[in-house]
Length: 405
Image 1 (spheres, rainbow, N blue to C red):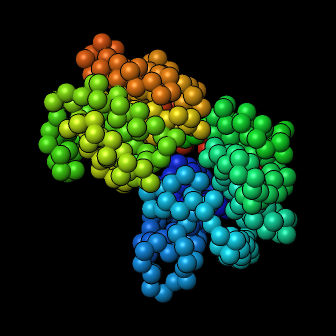
Image 2: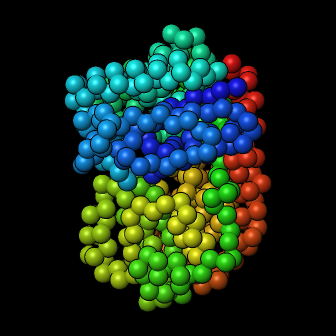
Image 3: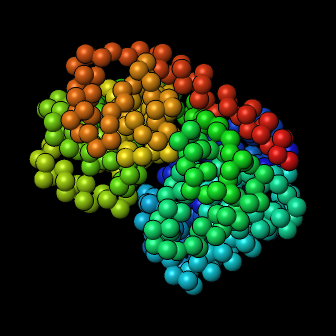
């Protein structure tokens, strides 16, 4: 079997990118041939053993010698560490170029790679273009709904626009099946995009345990030193895009309550709100909050391992892969009780708090740091490996592909 993946974003820096790469790696370990089409704005990008990569190059600030680049950065639903350009801000000419370039690319790769099934990420423009190409080549297609695509559709509805929504409808109509990443996303997909009804299937997100795992050899002082940070007794971490729905502003309000001289709060990630969040931290006189920007997965593993707790204060998180990654490394998670997070943040692995509730978030952080609530870090990591490791979940996808081809 051959599976062709298509994603709206690079393979690092977004949940859907990591999700795509994880599934492709898991399938490859099972002897399945995989290929991925994705946007990229760097000359050097991540390579994966035995996975064929077909980047479509966009222009960020500099030209990449020897390649054709679309004269804009790759568009996003919210933000990405390497792009804050939004789908809603594209001109008509940019939309047409986007469609034409990806239509040609997808057709070319289908002819070259000859996949048995196409697995598109996000019910949005590329999924619609992929559906058009798949139909022309008589290849079945499935789609994973990631949640931010539904935000894009809702945004268009509010603005009385229909570009992405029209492509989403074409994608949903052609798709054999639609994977959703949480119970919440499953319900939202059917409510927001009626053409998905009767086609949805919830399959849990998986984490690559070869990347994220508990490692007792990791030393806090060395990790902090590598980040240019002095040593602290306690560490609170946040990993993710710095965009509104991630709720980092709520975490900063909470930090103004729980912060002490021996407590460090690490903010790992980037996005359009970084400047305003740093301004907020300064206004709150937060002395021990460090913004460290986007970090490679190897460094995130170290951060999770030294963190006393990891916070996911999202206003509504479709799934929350960073929570799974943190728990794979043994860190208890404090998350909001909205979206997909309540599916797996249970009392044995973390604490749920209300959205926008900085007081409760601060109180939960304090309880963990003071030892009022104790968690078995080995048990947390073992639970994630058993229920959410990509290798444990890959058979569900194999069955799914077989049933829908």
